[in-house]
Image 1 (cartoon, rainbow, N blue to C red):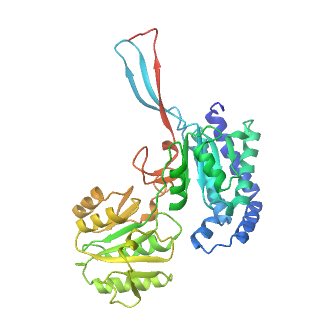
Image 2: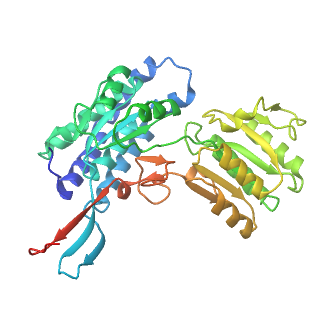
Length: 398
């Protein structure tokens, strides 16, 4: 078993990682090119997540440097109690032990998610997708170098080169202790992990996020939020897929035409319900199943709605429980929407693209959970811990 590394040593490893990422920047980008050239799929969001360029390396360096500057999340006192018999009782945060991160195509996860789990005092097992294997192995070699340079065991970060069958076997009967599994990827990956895992899994769920344009919306804000939410990063789980437009929105037809023309500048395919299909360039929604679908593509679906209550009901039925937005100048309607929509993050007049650990003040994230137990929404450093009771006595018996 690995004894918990001191916070000084964990921080030193993270800072060394920042130095190595800078030194090996070009090598990482060149190795990633071979992964990109070998990728023969036609999934544009997968390609987007797989690619490492200078900006991505910059993000990796910022992530580990910022992690090194954050307070130690382990050993934080959450509660204390003095028993009448004189015992002193504390509840403190504790590391999980070993965290397995299973992910698709994203070499930055090998830095950022591993970094968060490591800073939280955990041993890391990484199982990346085959499409990013060379990039991931290069980054893991840097982790090992950073650990060795600080006289820490390279066991703290381990890469599992497993195929699907081997991964399934490991999930069902791990050959080493695993305390927590974090799948990062699409619905198929998450379903696969949930089906086979024998230990707790943090579900980083699907997006399928909705914007509701209320009659009292600032229409310019609505346009900006929808275009940003849909087009800024189509591979993101915090992207917008659905727009609900209130039938009482003033100058509704002009608003919708304006929105469609702005989306068309980005080649977004627009689907609409019967209230909107009369407009040019809107394709009919083939079936209600579309409302359940997360697109991860230049595609959006719009529908007409009669009230905030109807918007809430529709979002709670169809969305992934990730992020939901209301655009309105009416504070009361915003409050009704935000309190009753069952999503991890609810927004009033702001883009869903901010559902992200770095953007919401956590300094980074391991995943964005749509589960309700343990932690919901972005899971940052301070959430990647469990807790433990420390009881100090001098011979008390019960």
